[in-house]
Structures are given as structure tokens and as C-alpha cells.
Image (cartoon, rainbow, N blue to C red; front, side, top):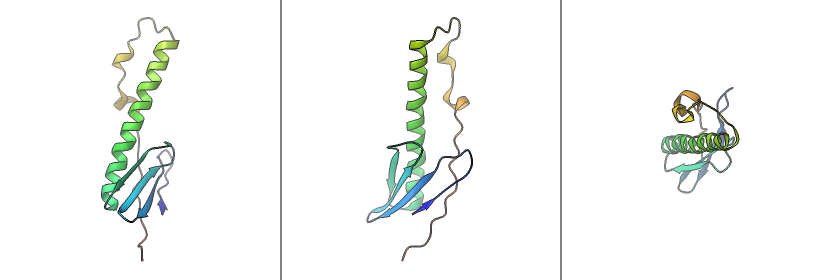
Length: 97
């Protein structure tokens, strides 16, 4: 097990298992992925994080729409690409015996 840590970045932990690796994003409970190789697990967790953040972003916008009168502000024009900037650190994994 190895963690990647960097300020402003999400923490991903890789667990070696019988079938490869399971990747878990600590800051997003339930955000897990897996892969036969470390590289595949890393690519898959990036996609899982993107999906989780997209859902959270849309949920936040929906809650704002239902609670706040924005007048002339059109929230449909808000882009998650403009608002979200996620950096997953490059991870180093120790050799397993």
C-alpha cells in the first residue's frame, strides 16, 4: 500500500490484491476502482474521480437552484471544467515480494 500526497491534490491509495490493484480516493468516500496493473488501476481511478466529482458538482448546482433566487444568472452556463481543477499525484509503488 502506498499513498500519493501533494497539497491541493486528492489522495489515492492502491491496495494490491489477488487480481491486481484496487485504487481508493480517500477524500471521496466510495470512490473506488480496480485494474489488473497499477497503470490500469490509476487510469480507472482517474475516471472514477471525474465521475464522482461531476455528480457532486451537478448535485450542488441543483441544491443551489432549489434554494436561491439567482434572478438573471443562468446556472446552465457554468462549466465544471472551468470550476473543477483536480490533480492526482504521480504515485510510486514499492516492489512486492
